Each structure stands twice: as structure tokens, then as C-alpha cells.
Amino acid sequence: MFKKNSITHGDSLELLKKIPDKSIDLVFADPPYNLQLRDTLYRPDQTTVEAVTNDWDKFETYKAYDEFCLIWLKECKRVLKDGGALWVIGSYHNILRLGTSIQNLGFWILNDIIWHKTNPMPNFRGTRFTNAHETLLWCTTSRKAKYTFNYQNLKELNDGKQMRSDWYIPICAGKERLRETNNQRSHPTQKPEALLYRIMVSSTNAGDMVLDPFLGSGTTAVMAKKLQRNFIGFEQDKDYIKLAKKRLANTNPLSDETVTMTKSRKDLPKVPFGELVEQGIIPPGAVLTDKKERYKATVSIDGTLKIKGLSGSIHQLGAKVQGLPSCNGWDFWHFKNKKSSTLLDEIRGNYRSKKIN
Picture 1 (tube, rainbow, N blue to C red):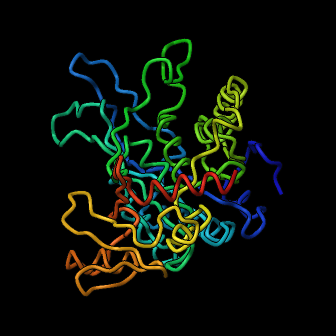
Picture 2 (tube, helix red, strand yellow):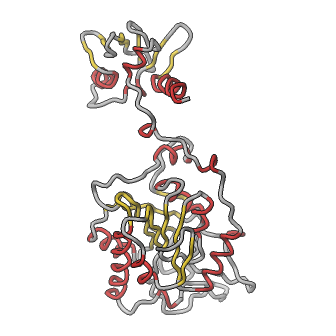
Picture 3 (cartoon, rainbow, N blue to C red):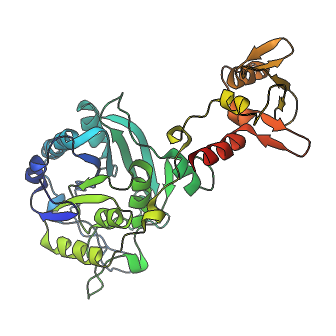
């Protein structure tokens, strides 16, 4: 077993075999893309484009690449806890091939995420569309697995709106881009910290174990340390390991208070509507209305609502009056008194806070 928060030099295909079964909460994999670049690329001013020409990105055939990916994907399936997350990033060169292998191994793909690069590199030859995005596959271990998705926290991160599957994040530039003394990029495919930040906030919690089998310049490790997640990283290039360790040395973890995320509704203690009735917070005989006061329902002693011959729970009656198959009564009904009209969910939240404290 590898030490927590460590980087190990070596072949990830061999190192993965040494990780115990079901011990990892999230795998982020940024494998070789098999770009198949053959010729040097030049800008219009004849300067050379810094492209990926490293040996680690070269495979003789598609079959060889598929076999390589199948090995590490099988190991990731083995080491992930039930309901653990696999995040894989790629381009049109490899993501479809990876998706096929992922599904064949029994993973369940939850979303494909488009990383829309707000500042992409132009297509200097002018022979194709500019490659302005990469694709991430977010997967869990099986179709019925109970996986982590911090929906409410992502919603807060997105100004109260549901987080979409198209992420507008710039590529590494400026101070974030690691460069050598000659101004050449230290790593050709360095991923932005904002990308890993969103991935970890979405599908991990503080203290979880994150594995990156192709660590590269160490962005995964840096964000894990900052967000108080644990990490294990594998990398075969010693120069990249030096970069990663230097970045880690300059990274401080955020405070416990800062990394503690607000719990989603489903994680909070249950409060039945009837409990609010029993406690007299919403007394029997009280009138509940919708936001526009089109419907007025009376609260019965058993916590059901009645309106014009109809009755049911706050959810059932909310659905009936709107002619809908379902309704979240907490978000539909308001309790109106002489001074104001308050959403039931807000009343429940205030009651729950007092109950917890």
C-alpha cells in the first residue's frame, strides 16, 4: 500500500496492481491521448508550436493503445470503492475509444462533460475547426451504485443555478502555466486547477482518497491538498515529479471550516410536516397558499391538507391542484400569517437549525 499524499515514480500499469481493492474514492485519469502527430507545426510567423510530441503519447497501432487503456481501466475498477468516481479526460483522438472500454468493463457513465476552453490554441494550418474543447467522462462503478454528487454545493458555486455539463474554463496561462528558464512549457498538457477544483467539489468530500495514475505536473495532487482530500499519484517522468513536488511544497491546505460544505437537503435530519403541526409551528386550521395565492388549503390535525373536497399530504395536494404527477410541497406551499407569507421549506429549515443546535 502506498502512503497517503505521496507521489511514486514508475509505470502506472505496474503500480496500480499494488493498490488494495476498493480503497479509492475517486480516480482522475488524464492518460496519453495518442495524438499521432507526425510533423512539426508552425505558426504563421514560422515559430514552432509547442505540441505534444513526447514518446509517452506514441503508440504503434490503435489496438496497442486500446490494450494499454484496458489494463489501467480494469485496475481502476478494482481499486474504486463501490460508488466511487472515475473521471477520464480526452480529446476526439481517444475519448470515444475510452468510452467503449469503460462501458464494456461495467462502469456506468453518469455524464459527459464538455470542457470549453475559453482561450484555445488556434488551428494554425487552417485545415480544420479550432479544437476548443475536451471531453470528460464522469462514471461510477455500476448502474445501481450509490455515488457521491454534491448537487447543492455545485448549485451554490453556479449562482444558485444547476451546474451544466458544459464548463467554460480557460487553459493554463500566465502565472499558472509552468515554464522552464527558456520559456518553454514545463509540461505539454498541464490541466488548469479550476478544472480539478470543480471535479473534486462535485464528487468527493474532505478526507476522501483521490488517485491519479498519470499525475504529470501534479495538478490533481495540488488541488487534493488544498481541498483537504488525500491523494496517491503515479508518474514515470522524474522531471514532472520534481515539478509536482515543488508545487505541493508551495500549496497550503484550506482550513477545516473552509472545506466544510453545506449539506444537501437529503443529508439533513428528516422533519415531517406533521412534526411542525404537532409543535404548533403551523397549527391545525392554518391556511397554506401557493406563491400567487391561487389555492388555499386548510391544515388538518393529522398534517394533511384539504381544499374543495380534495385532501392529501403537502406533496399530494400540491400535485392534485396543479394537475401534475408530483410536487415538492415544501417548495410549493406558503404559510401566511398577518405579517408575512413564508415558504414551508424556510420554516422547516429554521426549525431544523434550532433542533440541531
